[in-house]
Length: 133
Image 1: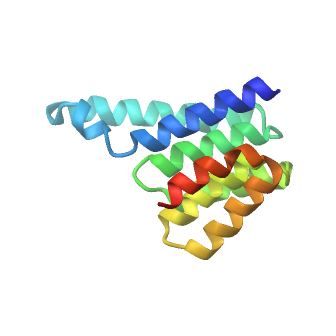
Image 2 (image 1 turned 180 degrees about the vertical axis):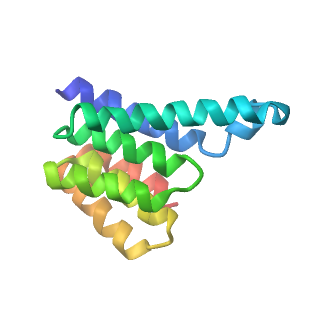
């Protein structure tokens, strides 16, 4: 279980660091295939919560997709909230919700989520302090 959490954290950090880099990699002339690819990813992340609706990690991963996919922060928050409904002590759910709230400029709410994340997983403190800078 600990390995899954570390893997998830690594994927989350890579996703956050990669935000905004897609346009530098993909050519603009191929926008229809890019749109197809995005829809495919959306279908995938939607399907994982359909296949395993009681899995807080699946909901959190779906939220991460929507948080990163063209700023769909409200949809991301719905997924994070579902994740936390399933496991209120899920540190990565609190962390990810904090990132989405920070993206929405809801700094006080984000701070409260980050504090909850550290409460449940103190190893996130360093990552959170770097995000706040």
